[in-house]
Image (tube, rainbow, N blue to C red; front, top):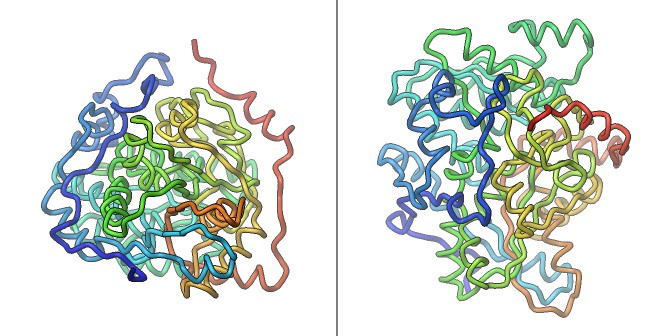
Length: 448
């Protein structure tokens, strides 16, 4: 069998898959934080185009991908499925390990899968500018690329610790014409209020989301774009798993275990959800979502209604959360430092379909380096979590001949400062004190 399995352009899926209608016991609706009642699309239309809101609340299982989006997808899609034979050999396992290589996109991650359609639907409805947040810079890079292709302006509020750690992400965004500021910033009332209390704040995705939302609601012709968590983002990312299903079939294989790293949940869900209908029909599949021990949303958080941002401006989402004012440590996997988990992933955990796992920073970098030495690709710090999860599953029983599929969500060639810190001995493991989690969860919104 060949090392990698490729699809032709004409074999690329032409519709996204919406898992929402298939989730047992369904999803809880988003709530209006002012009334605590279910929120309809009318209020959200102030920051999102109706095309995306229709997808967010759709009951359709298959939603066609617009031709204009397909044309841009074909720059890098279909993405390869690769058999990690050298990694298998190094581990001494009888498991077969496959990875879906999303690092082949122009900005090196899975994020353009949603950035392109989000920019497209905004452009179609006459929006001129998008405001957004970014953690490690993968989403900001992707949206900057997508907005440039559709003639939109873009402003990115980048979490300050990543703004300082990852200078070349800023360069990518600037190359595509975006404006980038460190968050918390002096550009918004909320940013200024955070800096007044803590001038040295590292920032968080929750703070950056608040700033981007404030920008969107106070600036003409501007909408807001989110890179993870929401249903329409998971929908767009489903192209990963839809392609992978076809490629596994070509390889004559089917996954026993599906693995992905989890921050907001988009890349893991994008690979996993197209396999969920098989699980519901009785197929035995283990879905493993891997998160940092320093930001254990799924493994130590609570399933509850919470705001998606620190200022409490978003609808309340029913999700696994550490509390919207949670301040994560400045680990290098900036894309995984978020207090909440996608409602879709949270519901799949609730139904015992997804198994969450948390891992430490140091073991993830060790896994990433082993992967680089064996497979020749340096993973992003976030992706190292998925690599580590796949290794754990492959080595539970070295003689068990199971098939593992994981999402290689992005390469690490723009994250070498993180590897420098690892090799210099400057990184360490960090387990979040339970008292800190309890204090944050005490401030959850009172619902019902």
